[in-house]
Length: 221
Image (cartoon, rainbow, N blue to C red):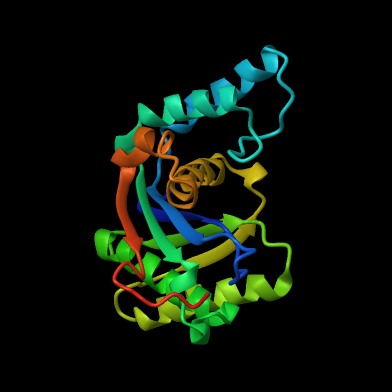
């Protein structure tokens, strides 16, 4: 198999409810890796350990996992930070101009920023690109995400060469989707709840963490 394939696993946090009833922040986080994925075995072993301890769960998911399970997952991730490249885009939704709130425009903007960080880092040192997100149940949203990614890649003509694919699989299907879920959960908690407990364990893997509207002063609601 080609050992120069770039995999980008993406997870989002928060919602797109631009009002006081929605989350304050939206995060889009990517884990980028080139095979082989040598760090997955410890998490597989932890999964089997938990089963043998009588803990009933299907896959790792930071939001629903018990605190004990989260602690053990983060303990493993913290020993392997050099193996991960994490990029995250942070959006203070109150500062988002109403003209950018249409989902397709919003996704186009945040994916452009996120993928730009990743592609700039790898600078074409890959032959194929595999972009994977968690399963998206709403077809319209799925098409908006795909369009945002394809629009950015098209703008990179000459820089992104060769084959690429975009897939939306349930995070149950892949450990790397579960890993990026954990990283994104820690980053989202930091911004949304000012809770840095988990973030402090994984920040060594965070290559970029960009607050899009850091210099913005206007609050729209």
